[in-house]
Image 1 (tube, one colour):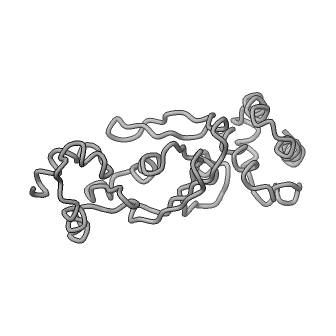
Image 2 (cartoon, helix red, strand yellow):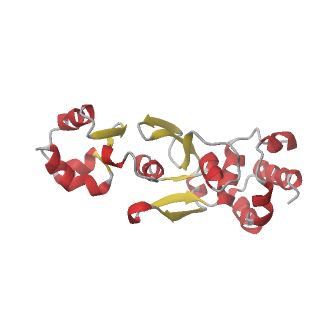
Image 3 (cartoon, helix red, strand yellow):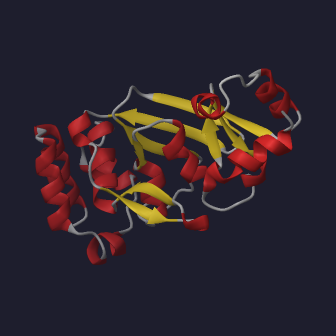
Length: 205
């Protein structure tokens, strides 16, 4: 099989895994993938998952691939907070929450970090539209903030919360505190309840 034949069939997927390839071509020679990676036609996202290098310079695809290479997952934590303008720092890693084990991957699209939560905490995300009529599973601002306080227990003092340097205009004008409290109750976690109270006190919410 030539790469052009392969690309013609698979390119619209943007990324794919070997199971999808074998479902289409049961006799496919896996060595083709290794060869096409070496030639720069494909990018290995993680073991068994690949993307076409033609997507390298397209916007949004690093975030889209975050959803695809480790599922179920949704983008949250620092990446989501930076997206909403709630924290000032540029974020190097693409951070996600998953019900699978904590994991990380590095590839040509970026550094991917996944933090594990219980399956019943996989809520509070929405489908955000991106280029090419695709969508990305992305935490709401309220859930991203709660995920951070839940998964990073050192945010347990006013000083630590101040050092987050959350954007006070966003907190006052855009954060839905009712929704945040509804979400918080679903965690059923006293330590998180305490951190949220400290958050409200620290930022006068």
